[in-house]
Length: 380
Image (cartoon, rainbow, N blue to C red; front, side, top):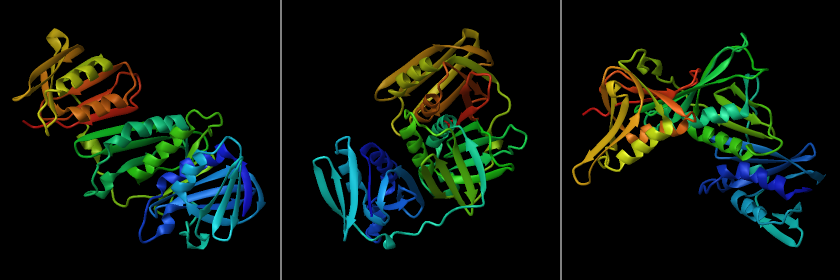
């Protein structure tokens, strides 16, 4: 194998793929990146057996071939090279790298030892605007359960609604039983017809989010991201990048039944003010409980956030609010509340509650119902 490419292209390709690799005592090859020339370009591939990432790097191929080298070492080395063309050549058991005055040889392993990644085909394909999908993903991913005692909660529920009407959409939801985040995003033109439900592991979607963020300020950002579903696998294709992941078997909980339909109290208030009030009160919340009490006072048009700790003292912060309904009080985990507020970008939010024993609902104060966030109460 012999080829040359720009340092920037190679560096970006390795930045995308090298994140998956890690040390594996039983299979050292999983710490390597597979380099394979294909159609006049270089294809980089990494896998951890649960998912695989590939990225096509433009270059000039002189000799076809394939080889694997330690991914992190290769990435770290390329990052330090000057902004010039990089020449790559495989000789015996090493990859020779040359760039300007820099020359090195990196020991590698034969590509025959690299796990075979079967192609996914024949599934339904759905297209989305990359920025819309990135935004939606960032608003739900943090609510996924941290442990895998219930495997289905370790992923994000993705419901693709039929695109045949021209109003197809994707609904994503995540919950850890203590809070729930749900966001919808419209499907782009060219999506296949037909509805489909799937649970995608949070780690795979975290990689997708990271890849989308790497392209965020790039001049040649692909216009769509395509999601293909087939054979218990999901493939995310974005320009030169492809990420394949297994999906989680099982049925996602019917979370719709815990979303309140009517409320005793509603309040519209400034998001930044509420975040500051919650942070202030959180300094006096009880260790391990992380409790803050929210009190809505419609008569006074105010929203209070308070916390009391026997050792540290107490605090009450007051926000102006356009509140209606009855006076209400609910105690919640301040960390969960802040996660939801920080995921929103609107100036104002709508807070809705039934009573202290039921979940409260928070969403952006906008005309559309694209995002909602629910926090379960701490029962006193």
